Structure formats: structure tokens, C-alpha cells
Amino acid sequence: MSKDPQEAPLLEGHDADGIRELDNLLPRWWVWLFYGTIIFSALYLLYFHVLKAGDLQAAAYEKESAAGEKIKAEAVARFETSIGSLTPSREQSTLSAGQQTYITLCAPCHRPDGGGLVGPNLCDDYWIHGSNYVDSIKVILNGVPAKGMLSWRGLLKPSEVQAVASYIHTFRGTSPPNPKPREDQTPAAPDKPNEFE
Image (cartoon, rainbow, N blue to C red; front, side):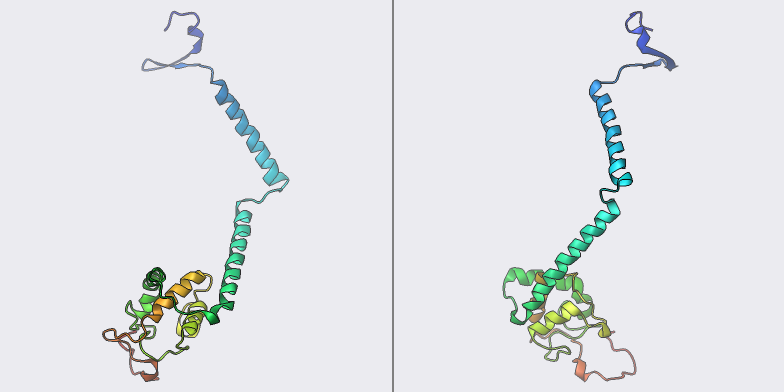
């Protein structure tokens, strides 16, 4: 134990393997910060839980989510008003973006080369729901629930829809190996599932 009379009172009586506890004063800045957190928590409790003046986390999320959905719906509505005048993009950056989206979302049903799998062949001249570019955009946006085609409305941005539709348009006239037969040439009631299902 220290013989310094000024230091001795700071030492507590605890001793563990020669390590003694020092009763030192906390720094002033730390103490005021601690008091600040107490005041902040009291004000937070009063503002959010007693007066209910602010939104709690769940309510704030719901409000922001609704605002986001409104923005998406307005963007899709603006896009739909201009669909009739759209033409396939030939820009390489757009086609590359469309290819990435196609490979990720469409290829599992239509194959990477568009030859058709569970979904129809995108390379032949027979298109069930319309063969022009605008029809493709409408199918991507609205889907074909009766055939299992998902609607990508609100999931893909308008620019992504246009990019993937432009990329799909490049399949026209191509000849992938072992393509799925045209939809109008498959038997109405086959005896067994075809090799693509």
C-alpha cells in the first residue's frame, strides 16, 4: 500500500492477487455525457411513447413503404402511357443490362438461348400473346398467370422492362439447338409430359 497520505484514500479495500481497486473520480466530460444520455432517454420516452408525437419504427417503415409504392406505381403508370411508342433499344449498354436480367429471371423457363423450356420458345415466329415488341413489354409487366408467367410489375423498373424486352427481341430469327416446338404444333393433350417439362 502506498505511503502517500494523498493517495491512500483513493484505494479501496479490495485486493485480488495484489491488484487493488482504485476509487478514482470519473472525468467530467464522461459524467456530463452520462447525464446527457439520461436526459435524452427521458425526452425520447416523453416524445414517442407518452405524447406519441413521432412515429415509432414500425409506423415510420409503413409510411416510407407506402410512399415508395406510390412512387413505383406512378413510374409504371407513366411508362404504360408511353408503351405504344416504344421501340426495341439497339444500345449495347441497354442490351447488356437486359441480358443480365434475362439470364437471372427469364432463362430458368425460356433457356439462356431463348429456345424454350417450361416457357415458350422465344426464337420462332409463333408468339402466343402477340409478336411485336409492345406485346412483349405487356407480357413482362402483366405476366400470364394462367400459364405460370409471373408479373414483373413493380418488381422491375420501367427501364429494366424495356431492356429485357429489347434483349428478348434479339432472339427473333435465331436458331438455338434443340428448340422447344412451336406452341401451336404441340399436341393439345399429350400422352406424357414433353422433354421440356
